[in-house]
Amino acid sequence: MAKIIGIDLGTTNSCVAVMEGGEAVVIPNAEGGRTTPSVVGFTKDGERLVGQIAKRQAVANPDRTVASIKREMGTDYKVTIDDKRYTPQEISAMILTKLKNDAEAYLGQKVTQAVITVPAYFSDSQRQATKDAGKIAGLEVLRIINEPTAAALAYGLDKDDKSHKILVYDLGGGTFDVSILELGDGVFEVLATNGNTRLGGDDFDKAIMDWVIAEFKKNEGVDLSKDKAAMQRVKDAAEKAKIELSGMTKTTINIPFITVSSAGPLHIDMDLTRAKFDDMTANLVKATIAPTLQAMKDAKLSAKDIDKVILVGGSTRIPAVVDAIKNVIGKEPYKGINPDECVALGAAIQGGV
Image: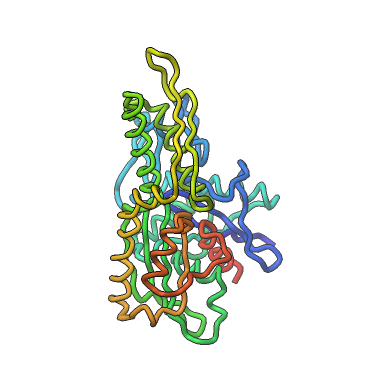
């Protein structure tokens, strides 16, 4: 029996899942990761890099690296690399091809069919562009489903008999989306959507990067912001620190041999507390609240009308983010499924229906 894969084609990261023995499971990529960066790089010798390997060289090779192409889906934007022009569909297809290949390696069989998710606010042309990307990658896209609906499916909320109002708060790497769904008779209806297409986990990383660069300049008198190789290392360290601060109240940012001065090699070694991190990202957390309240207003609902809250996106692991949404809705968000994975899992469930 041919397997249908579920794909969360994200702005920053993508994820692929499949039904195995009645359970949706995430398929790890060739590198062993459970999500794959939505990044495509082109080396000088014309080799194409997709995923983690492309992300690692992004800062050093910015002119030949394409990230966040999802923002351009459904537009006539083109990427030009070495006089060759690529559509957003073609770049997205490169990401989908990697996900397809990794799924085939994991399953030990050909994969030709998929369910792919899109933001609830995607227009018909953006949905069609996503289907076209699948086709270029050799995938028949059986269905395009909304990301918040997929997340709700992953939590099994369609199994409930009674009608529910569900708030899906999705803070991804590059975008923030809030959706309000109504469930009735196993069918989800989108009541309202809102968000900010330029706000996400990357901004939290950047806040740490800016702080590290400013501190280093203050202490050593050296500005790292012009040094591409150093910036890639600072970026990687900032993301790592952010992730660690979701589980710990303090982390150390340690980058040996970051640069060389006349006095010799210089190193970065700084402590960052969660309190300091919360302080420097408070405005980012706050920026998610107005769209959330607007979505509730558009759906004509107050906080007490919301039955369930689902968190989607890796950045919803940040404790200050969880606290903020709890304060607005007055309810504990659903836990138990990895927020990076629930959309892909829901897509796989839809594919198995």
